[in-house]
Image (cartoon, rainbow, N blue to C red; front, top):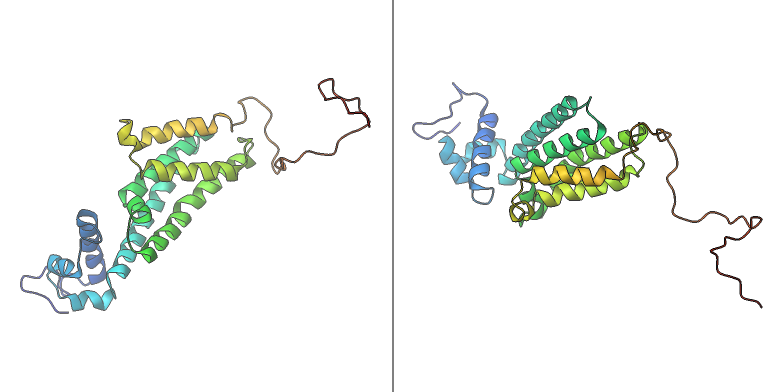
Length: 237
């Protein structure tokens, strides 16, 4: 491995070169940004040649993908911890804890900027896929579980769509700054508003598991019953 004088990296002392490259790339990407970090910067940080870096990572995009994979693994761990910590709490608090943890983790790794900022379309698609796998599918599962356990009277698909939108907008907009509130505070209020009409009342009959959702279409009219006094009179032919 080619090194520069006074090298930080040596195969004799630090044989795990890919991990060291990822550590350095992570530091630079999160301090200077992806576009503000060059492979020259990384080589200088590690005091090794770019050739050594390219031996393990074909380019900056593949290096960022590896950094994000590592970060999303940490996100998964944090979300699993959030679920475990609130498993005995009321359902609405479980949703609140999960969404706040998810929003905080996505902000920590810069996902909002990668998803909705200007940048590499392929990179954006990659981040979208990882957010879908790590965060959004868990949100879907959470609401489906709530429905199955009789906690929710509202279709879980609708709640998932609203929760996704709130998560994206609150952590990528200027609204928290404009309202002088943290994104977590606003998300907590959003959960309260979202679930206020969706939760089955405490002590009420649980919603049967597998109950079909209302289609929104009127059923057949029973013409044997007398007309409603509020119905408009028929016009004579």
